Structures are given as structure tokens and as C-alpha cells.
Amino acid sequence: MRKKKGNITDIPFVVVTLFIIGVVAVLSMFIMNRINTTFNESETLSAEGQNITDTYTAKHVNLWDGIFLVLLVTLMLSVLISAYFIDTHPAFFIVAIVLLIAFGIFFNVMEGTYDMFVTGSEDISTEANKFTIIPYVMQHFTTMMILFGILVAIVMYAKHQSGGGMI
Image (cartoon, rainbow, N blue to C red; front, side, top):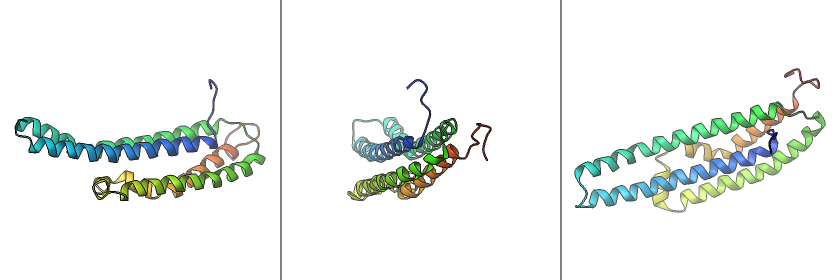
């Protein structure tokens, strides 16, 4: 694990991480709105306390959208950069494409699972629609990840045999 370099099999790690962050963001928004509603209806909480929860709830969507975008870009860049440093023979490109097709099925399942999660409840659907980046990425998850996988395969296999750089 010490000298591990990225490869095509790192893509499911990226997919699962993004899926979990997307679900956690939507659930946390759902919970935050419930807490905020309860606090605003409470007569024991001061106006200052209600303002604090209102402010945090208003910032919650942008915070999670930003976290998701930073993770998306960071994970993709790290896999691409580490994939560049792998010495592979171009004959294994076919194996990478076959793996990518199998991963495509997995990506489609993750996309469908997120869609069922979001549309399964009207309350959760309402909260999910407040986000901009997360729903867009999750609706186009399969396409984005397959394109990303092709890019990783190209980066891995489009180097000179001598390691002198890209073709």
C-alpha cells in the first residue's frame, strides 16, 4: 500500500465516495430544516438562537454543494495524476475497457439508487431540489464516470514506452 499508484479500479472508490457525500448532504439538509422548524416554533428559544439556526440553514446548501464539488474535482485529479505514473503495456487497454463497461453497470445502479432515494419521499425531494451541483452530477453520474474512466485509461496507456511523456 506504501507505493500504491492509481489505476482504473480506483474509479469505483470515487463513485462510492461521491454517492455517500451526495446522500449525506441531502439527508443533513432534511434534518437541518426539521431542526430549524422545531426551533422556530419553540417559545423557549430566544430570537437570537432562532436567527442562528436560520442563518446556518440558509448556508447549508451552498456549503454541501461546495464540499461535493471540491471532492469531485480533487478525487478525479488525484486519480488522473496517479494513473499517469503507472507503467502499463498498451495491450492491457482492452482489459481497461472491459472493466469500464462492467463499472458502467455499477455507475448506473448508483445513479438509480440516488434517484430512488431522492424521489422516494416528497420531503426529501424538496430538500434535494434546493441543491444545484449535487443533483446535476448525480443525474449525469453514469455518463460522467464513464467519460472519466476513458480519460483515466487514455492517461494510463498513451505514454511512450520509455516513459518520456504523452504521445
